[in-house]
Length: 474
Image 1: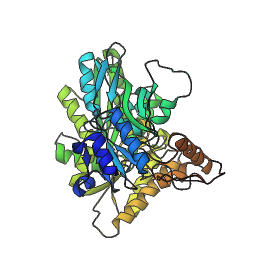
Image 2: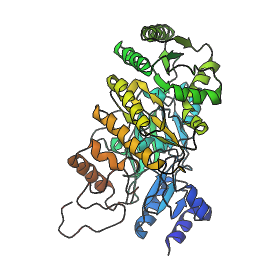
Image 3: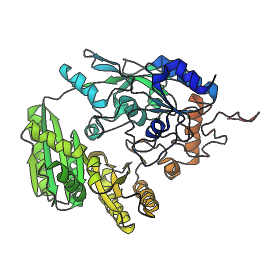
Image 4: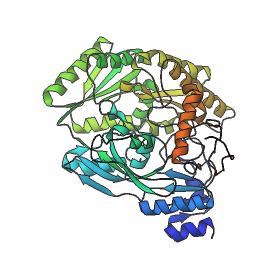
């Protein structure tokens, strides 16, 4: 039987796509890089995922797992054809309010999880900007963060267990309700592995109580440096707010032209800060943040007086990427992390790089944990600009690494940053990671050519089933 007939028999004709336009749609995520799928499938259960894995192995073709396609590093773009497995139909949701946990299907939308948990006074802490579209499976794959993970941690801090399909089609459950399972933390290996070790079908996640009080502040500054210095001093004062988000003037202007929220477009930078907890503590911390901001040159400190006002401020922050469409048809977004104490010099370096390449650059980022997100707005049809954009991007990453930073804070490595891995890791580091990949996926079935650059191992499978030379040590 052919691959197509096997897939149709296992999933039904309606859950297997083969038309060119359909394949085109599912051959890229929200990054700039496109692949080419052979077939796109929509499994309806973990058992069907396992069956597709077995079929793919028998036909010697790779699988790329995909959620909503909101990823920004081409992690869900097929590099070698094969099967794109869309997990959005895996949308079961079972909330255990007594244990403050939930078993969540990989296809459940992040915001829908918090909405379902809200009647129990609970929420799911990780909240990426794509919260209204991204799925839990994608969050697990990339160890996603968000504006409100400064105090509460990224996805890995909220995953207690995983249901995973391995390369031989076996369905296993890793972790569980117990907070500290004995033995090796295999679950921890899967979180952030970007679909290269197995396919997550369900996750057991931790839910946190909705805090009784919240205060949201907007501070505006005449310079980016003063805004960044404020962030550093807030943390140094012993406070870990729920969120500390920064937007520069270009980004604030783009958001305001669309949202009309009264944002100060004459400010060089605005800082969105949020504190949660009991009334007394939030009043005290909000007051302290205002004082630190003023001491660092803040021109104005606003405190949201209504829930509508607070929601509008957060809408502005979470719509920043969408607002880029007013400036140019394309944008290139990077995601790197630097120590908070190095934010000022890093921001100067980022602006200098963009100016040198004559590019339009905007900044919006999680200032509290040093997770920068420089965006380059451009028109890909302009001759030569793609090369300039990518060179500038590489230099930005290099500048972040030079001050002790990391390649990614929440978007992952995917294909976009794969060839930059040698900037951050030694050959020994890469070899160790490649060995781990081979333990879980010895034939390179899952998401080939992602994360690890070619040559990370002596016998680099690269995504196609290949036999190791006889007598070779792997």
